[in-house]
Length: 365
Image (cartoon, rainbow, N blue to C red; front, side):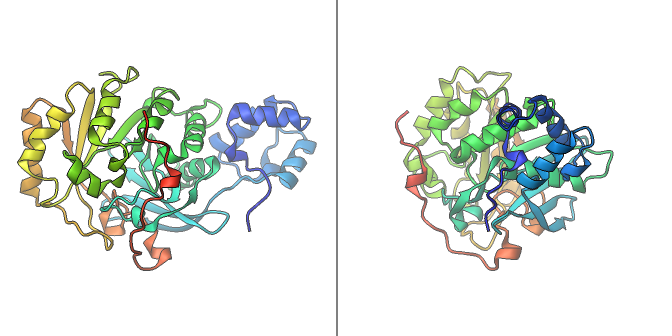
């Protein structure tokens, strides 16, 4: 049953200060609560000892503090960890913690499922159940932090998990506010990346949030192919998407677009595709991440062999573009890009659903 009580983690600092004041408490107490929750990881209002007893009692009786419960934690042979998390209404989402030499990157989800129905993505086969609340997004960070050794921290957060972040822009921007707030998680904006499949009208509002990174899932060099892989392309075709990015003044060499390109065998992995990419992206400050597709039961595509991937990246590199051929992480536990579907608790794969146009903004830009 859905809780009717407000959740502390749904509130940014300014919003919580205003709410405390409305309820008759000093607004600065909100800063203290945020510090307990985000800096110290306390999830019991009674343990917040510098709060007056009347406020602690009020919070205990009237507010909720935890948004997610861990259902399962899986560890890949490469060290990647997948957290299967349950919401208050028994929905299931996933977050992925990727350890690297000098950083820990957390991939968070923004929706239960996804309405965009990208044909290579397991999450798209679920359709959309609902958007996540702000607290359900930031709580993924706290749940992941809890599984790290005490001396380690989450250094980077990428909004690349289940869902299309720009279809849940309000909760995403509020969660970014909490991630970067000195009284909350105090992350540098440059350590945060938000990905989109190309929701053009929402890109400028996202960039205006602050100097966070923008990633764009491209995956094709022609509209014919991208229409099939990313159905949103029928609303915002390649020339519209790239034209908007090319003319965006908030992007620069110091703040480039990170283009994501998933290689699928005999679909978008030709040398002709590789040669087109630098020409398509000309004039856009950008970096290109190329990654072989991660197979899953809902997909009709397969990854190319290593030789094809290397040749594809070499063509782009020789054209003078910054390109990284990424290695798969966590694919043995269905934690890699395009594999998130909470399959362990949902059961078998589901047939892809059509995208829900009523959830999309108008195509005019």
